[in-house]
Structure formats: structure tokens, C-alpha cells
Length: 114
Image (cartoon, rainbow, N blue to C red; front, side):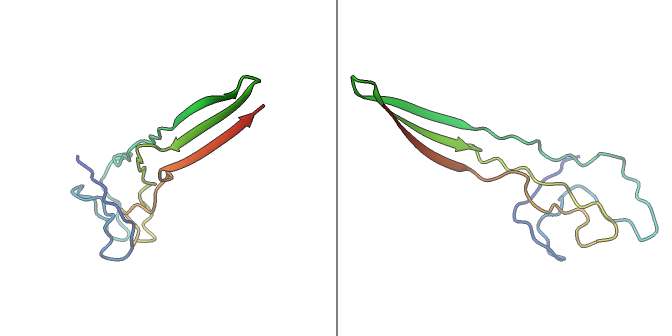
């Protein structure tokens, strides 16, 4: 079974976050579905962090300047949160509601040691 996720969480009948091409549908009220347990799998949490730095010797007496660039979630991978599975709220059934990861972030740091 191929499950594809579409970005841009939204709501209502035209919600773009429906798991497309999956054949999933909400059963009638008072009826149980026939889908097995744990058949919807989300993409795994993958975050890659990177730190680049350099130490510059400014004077022979031991004065150093350390510059660093830190990148969090370098490849900007998105992990979607769980799919709505409650029958009491049919407007969210089969839709994801958000993301579990932060977007790419960059931090710059400098340290002067003497």
C-alpha cells in the first residue's frame, strides 16, 4: 500500500492533508472498519545537525578567536504528526494535524579567549 502525504495542513472538506491513494475511509457510525492494526506508518524522525568552526590565533600571548556556525535540521526534513483516528470528530479523521520537527535553524557564535 502506497501512502503519500501532502503538505500545508488545513481543515474542512477540501483538506489537502488526506492520505491519498490509500483507500482509507471512515466507517459508518455504529460500525467497525475492517482495516488491520498499525497499517498507517508515518515517516521516521530524521534530524541532522552540523557544526562548523575555526580557531584564529590573534596574538602569540594566547589570545584566540573561535567562530562557529551551527545548523540544526540541515536537510530540513519534515516529520508529520499522527493521523487523526477518532470517530467522534469526522472532520479530522484520516488527516494529519501538524509537524513534529522544527524547520532548519542556523546559529552563529563567536568566543574571544585570552
